[in-house]
Length: 285
Image (spheres, rainbow, N blue to C red):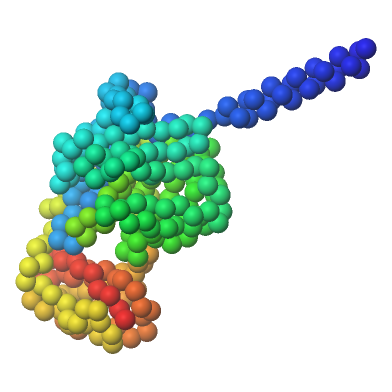
């Protein structure tokens, strides 16, 4: 009888343990009261920092779901209607942007494992696949890293438990040739994340002096062998690959030798004698 009771008790404990495991949840992407996201918007002819504020009490019911309303500031769609919701049981984060979305879009999924493919939907409705390269834990948070950028000139995607994705949490991926990255996240006024790729929470257009490219051109583009910069006399030219790695630097010339570089999309960062900075993309064939 005692053995039967013991086994019954053990079974109940195991069942309780199983229920606990099933009920385990991921950390929320949002603060108890408020969330703020500082986002870098980097385009061909300007760079600036925008931000979003999300008040947890500001909820709306749309298409059968309860969403948090976000207020964008500093972007071309400032004051647009933008909504987010999460599933803490799966770590999934969704965006609903009535301006472009017919249905909600999945931005993050913490249940993914190595080899899984995640599809981003851009502002044109195109799906961009990224494959999970590694899953690890940092400071108690689950971290999912992807093998390659979903677009060749964007940073590789990273998901962090409780933190918005590093690539444009608002949702646009390639609008007007812009890249958007999460700089910092704040919950209830406390900073909980700073992107290690930038180590800053604010980048001002005037601080980097990104200039109008109206009179600056690259020829030929696409290029093979070399590219010629027209419109200014460069003091220094830096060439970055799709992973953000500096692959070549030349000084005092408007011709850049491309021999030895693999085909793909590169970023040319040109500094003139006055310290003004120009950027443009070039495709190597």
